[in-house]
Image (cartoon, rainbow, N blue to C red; front, side, top):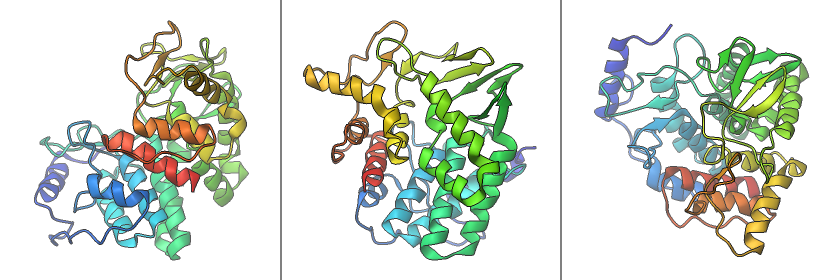
Length: 337
């Protein structure tokens, strides 16, 4: 079941008119609060509560909304958090499950043409709500987080062989006997928080089997993970039909491992980045684990902040950059706090 065209067109019209549900004008942004949220929100948060991907045509993602909600909660910005959550819930909520469509394009006649979700966005939103329920003692945040966590368990958890895995989305990632996974969607500190909130029966196998899969997904000369992997009963390998790169998705794997205090699992990333620094060569934006080819351009500032916390250093401050680079830098600062 998907949202009707008429409702989506109506929602898109409201957004473009700068209005919230019910026809109320959007309030002006609250005063900016310090820390990484201040710089991030100043550049990427719209007045109505949408995080704008400046490197991708001005669209928005459930992922970005989750990043924003986490950063606003950490900064104590309740007004900003509520604005983000109101927009996210109204514009991205699926009608068939308490999950969120992954992409919003304000320039399209149908801004949410693809109703599929992305499990990292779902997890980030649920985690931010859980954290906010504790910080501000709001029971409704806790109820909404619990509903999202329940929907993730119902719709996005699968068994393959003896393993329990997290799908990247409801549709498009499973064929008989084979699943395609995105390792960067395993957001370890969030999964740990869900395990604490809901118990081992709900999340224990997702966490333990996910850690084992991550340990096996080490490819090429540098033993790096790829942006996408596939898994069947025979094992784990880079996903066919996708570039076998440690790249723009997989750079978040060490971020979440460091944030989730799984420092032993950081060894391949630490070794590769340390070697580049020791040889005084550029840290590349991606590495092809099959051919050994490397990007002819450097890792972004945000990616370098991830490298910093992986190497046990204070993350560098962002010097600008697009939405994704700045988000990585802000999250690295939050993880190191």
